[in-house]
Image 1 (tube, rainbow, N blue to C red):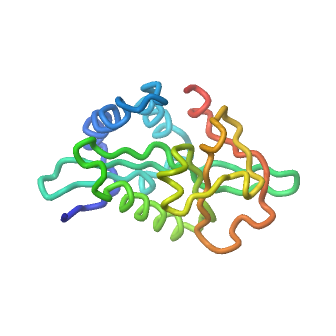
Image 2 (image 1 turned 30 degrees about the horizontal axis):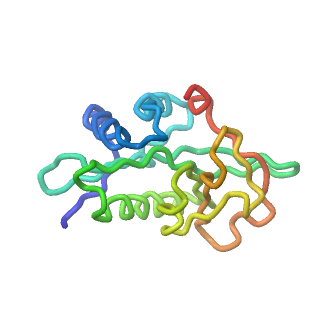
Length: 178
């Protein structure tokens, strides 16, 4: 399977909207606000286009999308910037073929090269757990959003990256609207 992993371009936005809508439609936990969240995040002051990626097969269509957004872990002593993965979407016909895994690896590589210590995600612990994500509580990091128990996960991008970091994970205002 020949896939291309690329930084999103404005000409991709409409296709990404449809992909994300289709990917989240069958998920009972989804309230259908993922596309609106993406639109809000793109207008935030710390949006970085290099942290928004699409996946294309040889025909040029878009079959995967992922977005990383800077977030803050605010502790009693330290404040640490990490990234949040939201959302990660794969076209229904392409799910189960490793597209999401490869896309996560590409995003993680970009985050690591940019010097970020970790990535946070709210999602299925079985899926993300297979990719090295563990419970955020293992690092004494708590979520400021109302998240179901066991669904707030973190992956460190280098050994010891979150030692002595603990605190409350705070999101950009766009997350609070959904």
